[in-house]
Image (tube, rainbow over all chains, first blue to last red; front, side):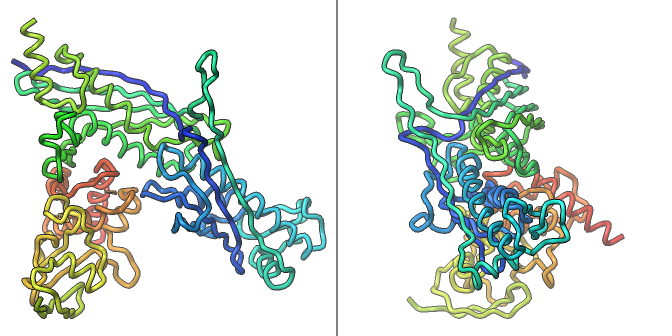
Length: 334
Length: 160
Ligand code: FES
Ligand code: FES
């Protein structure tokens, strides 16, 4: 009886969004009378930071500072349609919709500014600080605040835009069955090192090293925060969490946090995160969806590490001490 | 049901409320008094999201009856900022990206505050121990542990 060490590796590619009859998201953008920009969405921020990312995308597209953008995700009854925040689709789908809406709003904004400055709209640019100026002659400029006031009170125009992003439904080809069930894959690879006590079946994850390829990181600190939390969650799925320990039998299903186990701050593995940025072709500013993907590769990596350590393949999650001991017993019985 | 009067100090302010007998402090704070900083995650003492400080001790407000708090000195995360300036723990949580959905955050901050009040220079193990009654779904804990250690360093630098 001994503590045995093992190392496992796993790699995944993970789609962004889904394709069950088409995958649409819409966005609306309009300016307030004082030249702030309001983005209306039905996509929900679950805490992953969607509001911040949408504000960045809108600000970058219109050419204003991020703090001039307000995101309203308040009401799925009245907001523009979104399939929802799931399948790692928020940044990609809603972000593309916001870009389209913001472009249209920017165009109206430039047209109003052109009338005020008596120049062509195509000769104008934004300075990113809240002003519009003539290309090559920045002394000829007007603040976006004044442009918005003019649009609202003088020229009777709505500085606004509509955005729509749709991944259309893909049907399988009759002959081959080939189809495009999803788009824009993110990738990850994890190496996990574990110790397995072959007497108690207990697994300790020593280290997890993750590489994530996520397109462009639109907000690198928030990406890192999600990947660190996701890596922990992957280990939690691999070793702890289940609502149905004897599935399909419902007996002993966890009903509260006493029974639904998750590793706490005392059970953390040493975690390393490396981010590779390879901008995607169809994502907003090259982004992909890192959300769900980041909690996946740890699971097969830990399973492989357990196999490396004690030579048994556990193919049911979570990999509990009980399952390991039963497998070891079966192995010993030959 | 008969209502019971209860008076206590909440974040330095005299507070009085009539509650139904058996009302938890968590529900009294959130639904009656309007301090929604303590969160109800499990209502059975297993998640730590409802943590508050009562007379200097970390307490689960979901397991504390409001009517037992007469005369107590209660602190919640909502009362930590002073004059619009965030408490060092709040600052450190923000700077360390130690919060995502934020549901666990007020409970984490309460637990960390009691730790730092008693142990101004905690070890990593001290922090882990102090947070071990609080569950977080999002962050993987490491950013939270780092935030508490950073806040402790900021405190001791200010004291020096
Ligand atoms: S709500 Fe009190 S411990 Fe969970
Ligand atoms: S930040 Fe979401 S539970 Fe901790």
